[in-house]
Image (tube, rainbow, N blue to C red; front, side):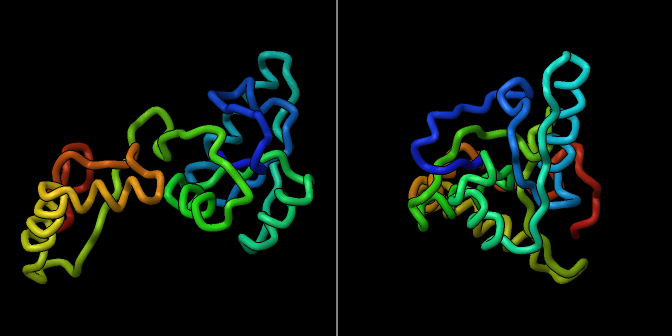
Length: 161
């Protein structure tokens, strides 16, 4: 969750967004989480979230800067990059894109291309030598860190070969 710099707002869950105006992209995991939180707030007697949708990121950030939005709920890597490059916003809450299930980031290649093991080995090398961690730290994404490179981690569909 991203808000205007200096907002003093911290988002830890549904109560913190009750009655707030928040932008989210349609069809995303963040939209599902936000809609669920809004419903939870209503069931608890709190105000729902005023959810807004914009077609372009520039429109979202203009609305955020002008005070028409309290926040933008988007993917953490995108928000962290924006915070670190634009300098006008701050992260006010971080949530797994999988909701209650920790999301995993994936890279794919054409099936049967023969590259899967090479990609996994290359990622493991930069994890082991610290370059991966340095890049994540630079962009404020250490919470997204993988400990190991995996091919078809448990719980995911078996499609890569």
